[in-house]
Amino acid sequence: MASLRQRNEKAFSYLYDNYSSALYGIVNAIVVDKEIANDVLQNVFVNIWKKIESYDASKGRLFTWMLNIARNASIDEIRSKGFKDSQKNQSLSENVDIAGSTSPAIDDVGLKKVLTKLKGDLRVLVDMSYFQGFTHEEISKALNIPLGTVKTRIRSALIQLRTMIQ
Amino acid sequence: MTIEEYISSGIVEGYVLGLASDEERNEFEKMCKQHPEVLAARTAFEIALEKQAMENAVAPPSFLKNKILSGLNFSSENTIAPAKVISLPAAVPAKNLSWLKYAAAACLILLAGSIYLNISLSNKNKDLQNTYNNSVAELNEVKKGMEIPSNPNVKMAAMNGMDISPKSFATVYWDTASHDVYLLANNLPAPPTDKQYQLWALLDGKPIDLGMLNYDLKQKKLLVRMKNAQDAQAFAITLEKKNRANVAVPEGDMYVMGKL
Image 1 (cartoon, rainbow over the protein chains, first blue to last red):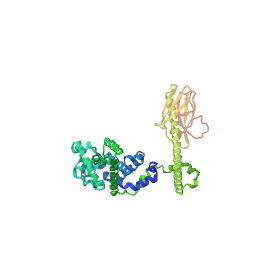
Image 2: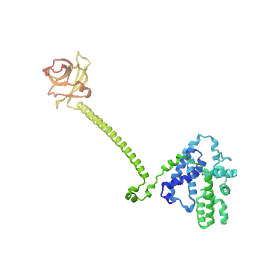
Image 3: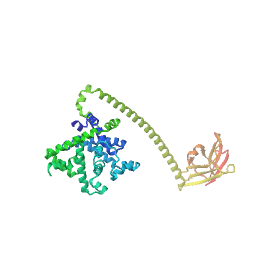
Image 4: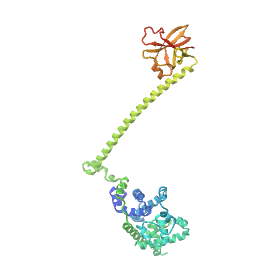
């Protein structure tokens, strides 16, 4: 950890060798497009490198911290204007789940595979909040469900997720 | 809410996955410090999540590692105390030396490129400076020429073509104060190679030599300064043989003539 803080090249090389695949998995689950995923993974490591000072071990494991950086970088990308423009040319079906339909047409890898085991409506809620970064308020508006219900259902989905993962 | 209920409320997962609100996060971090079982639940879920992510890892393309790592500004070499490197130069690993070699080569290439660029820019600059100086000189010449006709002391004689060359036309500007004479050859046919034009002042019917006209010069300058004329009633141009004995006497044909 100390050598990471000193931004030692070997330490980062080690970090990359051990965690890039896991982080690439989460990036791919969110941005889908491989080319963009490559750019996002680069951003992820730039962010890890920049923010390593602010990592606080008392608040969680290093991997959890990196996973959240990967998720945030991916969501930033899909919410960027450039990404939205690039998606305009693609078929509508891929974007249907963003609008809140019942069956996300996504590659079922990693966490997403776990998601498929959730009940339909819970799956949509977790997909929107975790993989697309919508706030509870945004989900409430988009799906026309009361905010309290969104929160309760996401809680319930998270509880189920826990048992599925463990 | 008991601790057990709190742990199983979904807050652990929400916190770890980054879905908790700021308020929930602050509360959860407090709870982790106060209740070891909350911290244990968090760590357990983190490990499970990590394991799950590792099992579902997707290897990025191999070229990406170099691209990403080379994009980071490592301070790696700085971790070696500088004094150590200086006092023990022989102990510098060979790897670092080869790196230095490449760096030196790169510096030389950059230096050569820079020198080349400097020289070519300097040459270009000189060319531009010359062009600029010439332009300024020409402009001053033109300005000076333009000032002459507007001087109130200057009189003008428009010399029209004679029968021998009716289309010929030239203008003389004569400064009555300074006696300077300027010639503007508006339209004169190119002379044969063995001949040249000569300007005359006419006073009481007598011609006074005001000099030969360099025909090439006329192409370049608007106004050509000729010999001074103390007094004149009219001006004329004749076409004379080159190198004749007495230039004070006109021998050739008169091309243009005009009174003041």
